[in-house]
Length: 351
Image 1 (cartoon, rainbow, N blue to C red):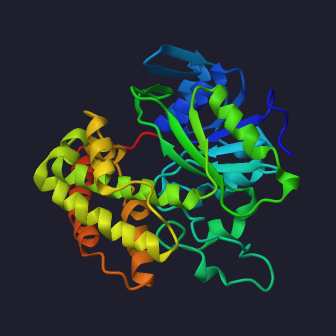
Image 2 (cartoon, rainbow, N blue to C red; image 1 turned 90 degrees about the vertical axis):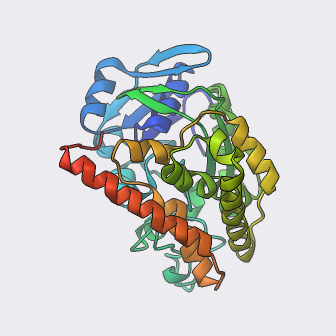
């Protein structure tokens, strides 16, 4: 069982825009927060703490910071706030954070590695082989499925728009919202953990909804990501522009339908219609997607999780997704060009 609501030990792995936003909100709410970070980001957080600038003003708080999970020790809640392609390499850092009752909340964009981990633990004897549950695009060797038990994972869908002003300093101009749910049926022995998690997040000012069908929420976010992120790189547009222009709406419509068919093949139902997605995206205003921000800064893009995972799942069920595949190829071209320019100018990714 998790520690009492007043004192759970909370670790945040990754101090990008989402991780910094979450760390600041929870630390300001007087929770004990540890942050796993690297390089200049780690130094900045140790020196000045974390800071969130939002519609209510500036919020600054001190947190425990380290670059080694062993320094932080066992935690009650671990929020995983990194890019999807970074997760497998973080396993050695995650394992010291885990105890018998630790719950892992992956706040990662795109197709989650746990999506097919339904009712069985792939490590257990006499269960389905790992090949049937691991998704190569996001878990190439099946390490995440093998090493992170489904019973410890709470699925999470993130609706937080934020960007970094500086290491340890995040700016968010829109309300923060999360959807959470167990990815497998959880016995009552673990009861209270979801209630505790929701209360912690709500106390941190994050609107949080529990759902018994977390995969529907995941597929809905996948549809939102897939129809916006890669197209924003190709077109250089904000969400409002992307979802309101008639020509782009036609491409969005095709991407949405191909994603819907893939979700349906795996028992998933999108929680929104195409028109609802278009209306929501337009209302988001002049927001640049995280992928567009990465592209403009010469960073590697989250195409494996946001696009390739869906293609892999579609191919497994022989579902044609020609528009998704075309958009992937175009975005790869833009990514390669940006990375070449970044390297030519000596650019480096932030830690």
